[in-house]
Amino acid sequence: MNNRKYKITFTCAFLALLFSGVLAYGQQANRHRSSVTLEHGSKRLGKRTDPMMGVWRNYGLGQFIHWGLYAIPGGHWDGKYYSGAAEWIRSWNEMPKNAYDELYKVFDPKAYDPKAWAKQAKDMGAKYMIITTKHHDGFCLWPSQYTDYSVAKSPYNKDIIGPMVEAYDAEGIDVYLYFSVMDWNHPGYRSKLETKEDEEAYEGFKEFTRNQLLELLAFYPSTKGLWFDGTWDQAWIQQAAFADELEEEMRSVIPGLIIGSRFRADENGKRHFDTNGDLMGDYEQGWERKMPNRIEDVNGNDWDCVMTVPENQWGYHSDWKGHVKSSVELIEMMVKAASLDGNFVINFGPDGQGNIRPEESLIAKEVGEWMESNAEAVYDCGYLDWEKQDWGYYTRNRKTGNVNLVVFNYPASGKLRVKVPKGIKIQGIDLIGTNGGTIDLEEIHRDEYFLGLPKGTDHTKPVVLVMKIVEGDAEVQGVYEKAKI
Image (cartoon, rainbow, N blue to C red):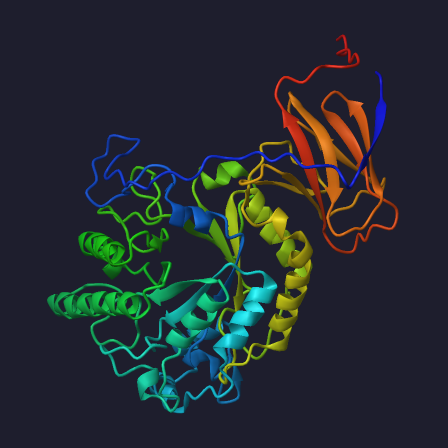
């Protein structure tokens, strides 16, 4: 075997591989891969190809904010500790329901500063955000005309959502509205429909839900999409026709509106994926606090992962117990998501006064510092069909064609193994965030290389290399004989 060594400097010119623009979006209703005929199944096969969905696909990093009345007790009541997710404390046996329902009378977040929140998100590198307009408790952070259980009746007595949308829009961050269909406060809400009275009450609840959703879209027309929760109850699952019609109505209000896979079920009660296995909605929402490991796991669909910093706290809990993720862990999850054609969303839970807790602010700062130099390995990036190596992840920029190597596990040998597909030749490599030096590129076999980073490279943080490649029938040089067995 003939080994060859090359020296490649950081001043190499990069190859710009331009991809075609996104196609016009046209829903193809009721087309399926199997023979089951559905009236309320998936409306489209494959990914949306319109510009608005193209923007969503290229976000890379987002921010989730869970905020509501549950931030006031912060995981405690009457001196007792609640170990569950803070926003579920009303369902705790030790939490008197009437006491929780009266918390709106003391909701007065004097420290709430939406411009500061938006600036922090911008500095972190977030391209979109999701805010809980209403969680399962039913308390609304906007002055809804359809309920008295809102900020309008609190001491704060001002709209929370409007100034937030304006602040994030001003920072260039797209806003998505979280909405829980489950509503513990509404008298017509039911988890099951067991009697005629239940069915009659639920009809009123359905109209209330429709009114609130259309109200949100009317109040905040720059909204890019809706993020639904609390849709797993049997009562809602049985409303396939109603939910299908409501989805179409919402989409007509804001053309291009993006809705995930958990809003509705088909007529057979299938959620996320209909009876034929086709995705319901525009992207898969099944990756909550977990991630796929292979591109096959996402079945060719768009998807995002929403992730907590502690193990299972979304809303504000004053005590974080168990493992708390570091910024490097979250950065690795973000890069992994990009490498598998997904977005990654980090959750924040402000306290009852509207303060972002220090631990979350530190996470935002550290992620932002890394993104400041390395964002090109995340934004506009997706899957690259190369053999994955143990040092980290590949991503490929959809707009430039650049190949990014994001190194989390630096080999003891000091050399990264790279195996490229047949017909690919490496022409140049740049190590982001350095001012000089060279990378050793050693061919160890046909289409297989060792990359050696410059001495002094900081391995305590993820390292990003950008690779220039040439595709096509490359000239074969050297002789590599196969083993004779």
